[in-house]
Image 1 (tube, rainbow, N blue to C red):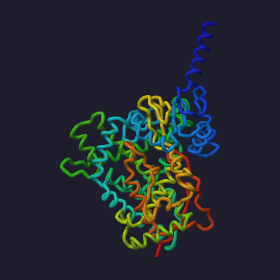
Image 2: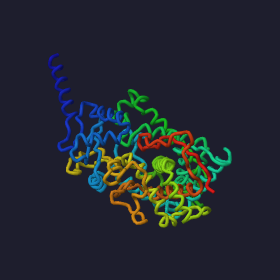
Image 3: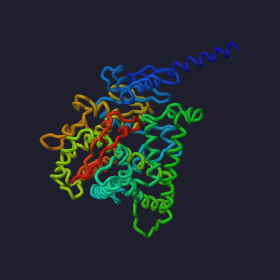
Length: 500
């Protein structure tokens, strides 16, 4: 009996020792306690500050002299937050940290397998990313094609706003703005992917957009409660968020598989392909399904585009207009430039961009405000390596903390003010070396050109046709935002007035 008791005590002591022991030269951070790591300290600070990025900043200042890296362990996951400009550049170009995380959170979304292009790595990622970019260009992903799609969608948007105004009093309308752009942004990409555009009133699209908003608000770039503590997905699937995570993804899977079925039914190999789905179906029919090419991989790629490809741009737009409502002088300057360069009738185009530096600066400033409140898509150390002089063990999750770059007071004086002028020098666009909100190197966001095209065309077209004013009797749009995997502007309304 005493031997069994002694064995248990020794085993527990060894477990506690190894579970709380940090790797040698691991980046500085809070102490680890058994099972939890430093989850409780991170959670308390997040509750205190209201945002994960603020909690990370406080911890970095508390535990690190230079604040370049912060080492954490949350549940089973070792996590390194990369804070400084120099460390971020080193990380993004380090091929040893070029992987994507593994685990229940990242693979459950694709049926327990590594599928898609957003959260995969290695040869699968290289081959599928290359295939996606090559064939999307056939349907508008090139500069001129995406511009035509964006301008067409912008005109639909203007028509819809005029309809809302006409249904109100014919002169003005109060419009809920924080989610107004979602479907229009989705259409610019979905036209290429599936040859379809949706109306904002589409009931299925309303449900899916609502589910996506809730999903992105309930998780972080580092994962979710059930991903750090996988046992909770079984023990308490509701409280851990696992049940909602699965429910949301099942709805998205169903939506995408139904669209794939429609494409398969009408596919004719003798006819020209109409969109990316057709191209992929043709490949499957000619080659048959293999590990890297399958219906599951196609659905996963479409899901990546549906979620990540639209979420960030639409939220950047909502941040932009929340500031434009607050900062009427910025809005007027942008409108004066539009009137001078484009006029009142023609839809703005990318050819106008060199002659509209102020509006281009508005685009960069709205992206800065969006990305400056979040983290990059997580990387994974593919093997033991070093970063900024610290040891990074294999399979450690590594994230860029964009707040410390894009909201740094030395790099951007008055960082929380909306000042497009910070990107102008002698009347021309001037982007500093420390401005890389879309990342760097191999994993640079492949949709950055489309995102900037959409924001520029949509913003200038809306400001050409309308003024966006504070709603009388209501407070200005809040500078706070909704935390999550990607930040969302707090819900706000604008009084929309047609320009004469």
